[in-house]
Length: 277
Ligand code: C2E
Ligand code: MG
Ligand code: MG
Ligand code: MG
Image 1 (cartoon, protein in one colour):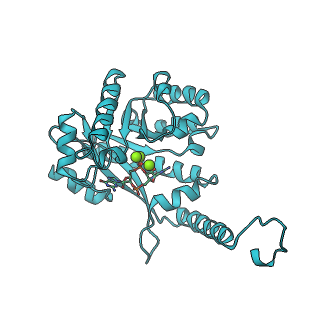
Image 2 (cartoon, rainbow, N blue to C red):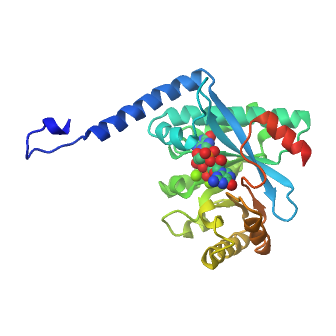
Image 3 (cartoon, rainbow, N blue to C red):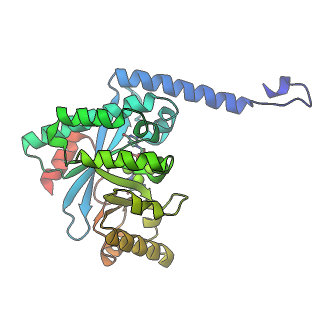
């Protein structure tokens, strides 16, 4: 496009930008189809206690499995879905499926602990989010007190006042609230004292070198102290080595999640994994 524009005039789109828009549009269309064609699947990553590796919960992580192609990571398709209301349809589907599985596991006697679902900003801030959640819990009563919603602080701070009342309503339904990727946000954490948060998930960026960098260790120690004082539980994200886990144990971090012991996996594999523990 750019080379056909007369010199001196403004160029609004480069070819690269046009390609990117095109690619996003095609991902978005394909994703819409994927939802209808049942190509989305829930994977589950266990969370374990640091002191004895006892499983204590799960995080639901979405996968797109187009037939005959390689699985597509949520890191690629979630940001595209987040640009439109498609993220609300996907988010509703994930919540519905998760509740369906929690209810089933409950009936079958599988002990999974709490189950956490990631919630995007547009979905959380959609007008009827809480009433839909409430309806879902009426449909799946076993999910009350077993479901937790994970949100990044960006989601909450987009509209703090509204988030606060919404979070209180969610708590009143018996659903837990967790701050995802905690510590990477741009803001101060003073907002925490105003919000009914149950859990902080410490971002992988601080865990990665926790056994090598005294600065990172100090930050985690501080965040753990903060969580203790505010009576919030903590999960360290992205634990990949024994040495990272040993450092978390020294710091009395209660729980962790990471490739070291368990990757995100489909349901059948999860139930086998749980039975082995
Ligand atoms: P997140 O919620 O922070 O999830 C943690 C990510 O770290 C997951 O990536 C997980 O597979 C990965 N991970 C776990 N342990 C390790 C580890 O030891 N090392 C490394 N390198 N990575 C680890 P995943 O599954 O690709 O998901 C990426 C992001 O996509 C999630 O980050 C979350 O923000 C988003 N996402 C996933 N599923 C959903 C969903 O159902 N709804 C929404 N709105 N977002 C989702
Ligand atoms: Mg998460
Ligand atoms: Mg995270
Ligand atoms: Mg994340």
